Image 1 (cartoon, rainbow, N blue to C red):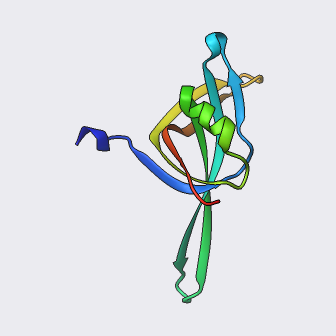
Image 2 (tube, rainbow, N blue to C red):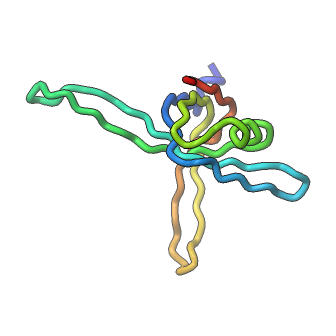
Length: 110
């Protein structure tokens, strides 16, 4: 049951080409956005499509796979965990970020 704690699985389309940062020692960080769609009928019976955008990060080998094979518009499936972090921007205001840290990525579609 422990592997169900803080687990996120998403399937969607990549919203931007990956942003890749390489750190000392060659370790890489990939950052992308992912759009997921939900369909439902509203109270009037009309079909409604809702798109949610998710910020995703990946480290190491997973980041290298994303760098090589993932581009804007590509459909992917990811498994990871939800993470939160804060930082102070250049004006001294505290900013909060929620993102999914990817453990595994699967390339879908063509």
